[in-house]
Image 1 (cartoon, rainbow, N blue to C red):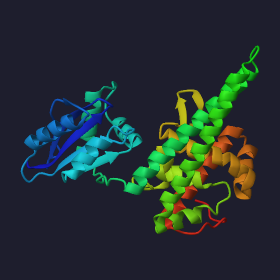
Image 2 (image 1 turned 30 degrees about the horizontal axis):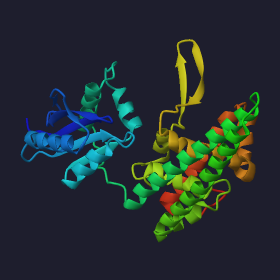
Image 3 (image 1 turned 120 degrees about the horizontal axis):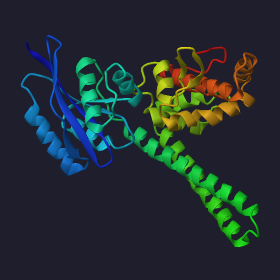
Image 4 (image 1 turned 60 degrees about the horizontal axis):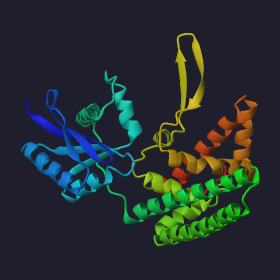
Length: 334
């Protein structure tokens, strides 16, 4: 039987990565070799690529597959792409769904690398396209914005704790207020930088302008959603988007046990939180979202479930307006 594809599955962590080389033939039989480990720095990456070249089979396409986990995969993915390699980057929830189809009970780096190799051999997956310079810079800025917001919240919480403690130090509270003022200045600078960055691309700004007409969706919400999804580059439909955000609804039942429907929360935390707080705002300012929220409550859903439903609706609305490049129609429901 002829070999039709070779796949190298890679499980990446901060300091190292584990890989497995596999092949599949025309009879759909797969063979996966034992794992190898390399350091996740430029020397280790070059050693890995030299190894990969020794494994390459003439006239057989070679694919590298990895998960989009954090930033640890980026150095390897960019290097391989610069060498003209076929690189596939999958969303973690997608690989997790595939792993459930296998008889795997343990989770280790070699097992995950083996699973990714098998996934690449059995599935037809789209090749990864690196994000544009604009999207790379946007993600750095939106993450910085989030960090500053968290530092500001932490300082405000410490002021609250100090004020309610026995004999609070006025000097400490004064310094904390100065920190908050500094964070506020930096937050405004970052927001201004993000706006300037996105205005550089006219088509991008036109799409953002369409979305800004939705009550409850602000500029920073759109920026964060675009940054966390690479402008929806890996997203193929609304269902995949809600799953990636961890806003998909799951039901846990077993035997006579009847559990409640909950959101999975197994997705991009930053993406999920980028629409949660705006959902609360939209319930107050957007009549359609308020009606939708109240209908959820009338059906017996708790308030938090109603907010989550609105957050999911806002995320899908941003997605559909973006991909269709169309003005907002308040009577349209995704």
